[in-house]
Length: 361
Image (cartoon, rainbow, N blue to C red; front, side, top):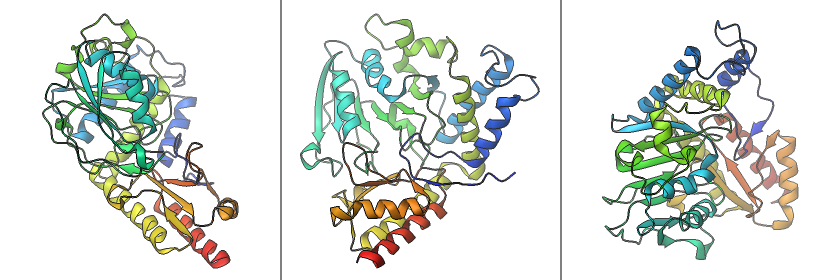
């Protein structure tokens, strides 16, 4: 069965998923395997769903090449909940954590962390409207961890390197997880909301070093303690069953295509195609000041003549392109090119940019 693509979906999240995931996922709504039940009604304590959880954990571990030092957890609440769960679990009231401020999401994480301990903002690009990734900073050895946001969806910047430090790195990878290989051994904890490259909204993936999971130095609510989920195979309470199942299907799809190296190759090809046109076309300009920090996932750009924004958007709509508008706080345009977006969609966008140039150049 071929799943027809009705639109070219450049939405920043929730975003496009692989066609095979839609197909398999829709079948499971009617009947999951040979259970005689819908995936929406099976017990999360059933063997059938326990197998889903085990395969999901195994796939995440395989894709990232995780050692036995790491635990894979499925939580809820999105990255916004991790903004405070991280310091609740890893930061004592009299201790300090380091943060790198590269956008809206990192600034929100900083605000939450300050509720639980001391926060040292080691570097920030806020003064230039987050147009680059700061490099000129030192990491004090007394920090409990160093937090960064690997990809900045609103401003279009992305880390293409990791800070060198013995302090545990904590990363919000919500918008670029599984898009490229990552040396997880350099990280103490990675978290990601699902609705970009993993699956639908509703589940949050956390990959944590086991020695950090039991690090909490304060009394915690049961549901806000990483150890609760580690001790109960992410099944302490009823999890988002369907979201985890679709995430498993997505990870299967990534593995089938060749894993994270294949994903990176495809994503670099798509981003290269778009940025080549952005740099060539005189009617558009990129937002990111440091070209080396451009995101492979979220390309932010504007029309040179702001009064023509509406006309370009009209051309996009005619071409079946949706989700191209920039974040409401930033304006302009944003092309989100997550794993499941086919290169053909990027070609359609490029053709639309060229048509815009012919009409208004």
